[in-house]
Length: 139
Image (cartoon, rainbow, N blue to C red):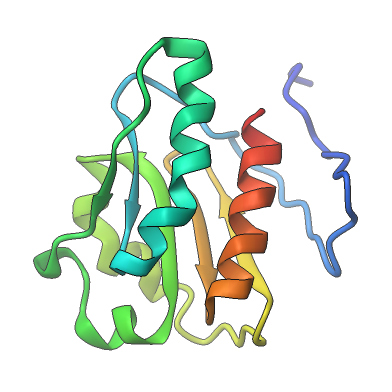
């Protein structure tokens, strides 16, 4: 058994949480926050500066190129992906596994694996909640 956290204790308990076995997120200096809408950008500031407190430099928050994400997917969700510029090139492939997920207003879906942390929301309320949980996890 590894020393990685298997279960996380949240300040406020999420409505639903499922832990899956697998390899944890493996951070490196190439990780950046990517988003699909300009209105999402503001919510990433606190996450960027969280890293500044450790590395002395805030992480970038970049828009996902149109060529990396189908229009129907960008219209369906507000999304934040914490990953590398190499992995983000497969955004359509990453998101295709989540196209059937129903997310209620004010709620979010967050999943992490060894390559990325993915946040999906239908509205800004869900996005705010999701970025708060991301910040809690990354702290």
